[in-house]
Amino acid sequence: MRCRRRLAAGGIKDAAFEAACIAEYITGFDRARQAVHSGDELSAEQTEQFNSITEKRLSRYPLQYLLKSWSFMGINLCVGEGVLIPRDDTEVCARLCLDYLKDKPCSNAADLCSGSGAIAIALEQFAKARVKAVELSDEAFKFLIKNIELNNSKAEPVLGDVFEIYESFPDGYFDLIVSNPPYIKTDELKTLQAEVQFEPKTALDGGSDGLVFYRNIVKDWSAKLKRGGALVFELGEGQADAVARMMKAAGFSNIKTALDLGGEQRAIIGTLLSK
Image 1 (spheres, rainbow, N blue to C red):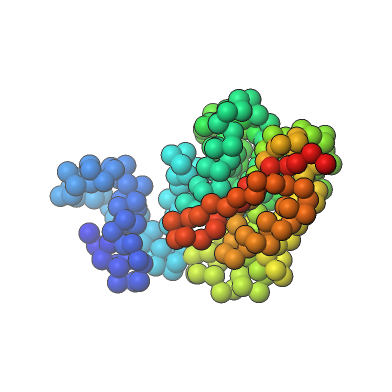
Image 2: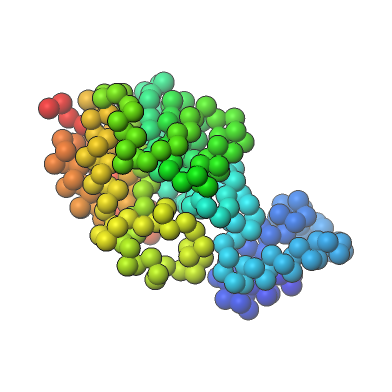
């Protein structure tokens, strides 16, 4: 396929996979059907679409934004400029939550910095949790609402700043609070791969040390948990020890981390002790 060859020549690592994704987006054929219809002639409109999308992808514009959707744990999510793209690493965080909630039906949960709603929708669908999905960005919030509706989810979107809106919830309300917060150091943003430069900086910038959101969430939201309730974070590289110390100082115990496929400590969970 010409699309695959051009992507490969342009330095796109998984050119075959991406070309198949683009072909499915344009033709509606999945991989199996693409093989069957490989000899079909494309319409002029489809050819133009292939050329346009391929050119934009070669500029390192994210594939997910071009396809306008992406899957997270089997959940189809609309994505586009203004919202962080769901990543496989975040499944590590979501699965820690699901393991904790598996014997706790009808739990109250909060997903802070919810973005596309990936974690919130997963908790509502797979654990039947009652989830408040908190997001500050107006652009991301539009995707959050759209994805909740798309998946017939009962998660509740809440527009607000996690540094302030905690005051709206009573103490001891949540069984679980989870966040995949911005955790990139400010001075490292410019070093991120080209595709990430198209994603919203507000969803990436964790302050000078990458830990601003962790500190504030631990400080402000811990009281909103029930005793024995869990706090779960996705982690950036090398942040596990610092976040564990914050949680321990705030009264959390049974602190554990979970590894991603690359062996990095990607998520952390702790439960709140009685004081």
